[in-house]
Amino acid sequence: MARVLVLHGPNLNLLGTRDPAVYGTTTLAEIDRELVVRAKARGASLRSAQTNIEGELVDLIQGARGRADGLVINPGGYTHTSVAIRDAIEAVGLPTVEVHLSNIHAREEFRHTSLTAAKCIGQICGFGAQSYYLGLDAVLARVEATRADGYPRKTGQRR
Image 1 (spheres, rainbow, N blue to C red):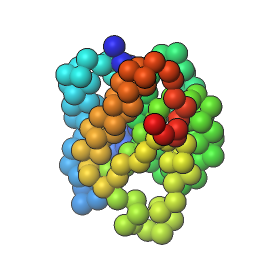
Image 2: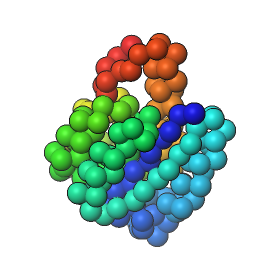
Image 3: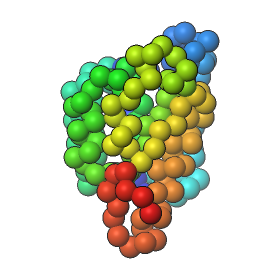
């Protein structure tokens, strides 16, 4: 059974009420419930966590080694600023998909750069809550392909 960890960064606990025109009206609890349903339907287990604290995100990423087969992460505002989160993703070597509710490339210029995406197998943005569901599908596909190939693949490595 594949094990996926979903990490939500700063301010995502405010989903549903924070700027609904940008982030939608779906709450974080609703996203997490749907992710569990979708993971279970694929024969996978899923746990999720949210924190506003950068160091806690680093600890959660590092703690995933040996406990998860893949990560889905929305680093929130840390996407554009955190070398520490980038380094943690690289260090654990788990297939990781970065997701964003909004299209960060169509927003303010400072949001166009992701420090973390380069250490992920991909980035999905602009589809609201669906970004998370697509991210789950993508990471599970990579985990399943890796198991079928019989060898582990480092983050960012192509088939």
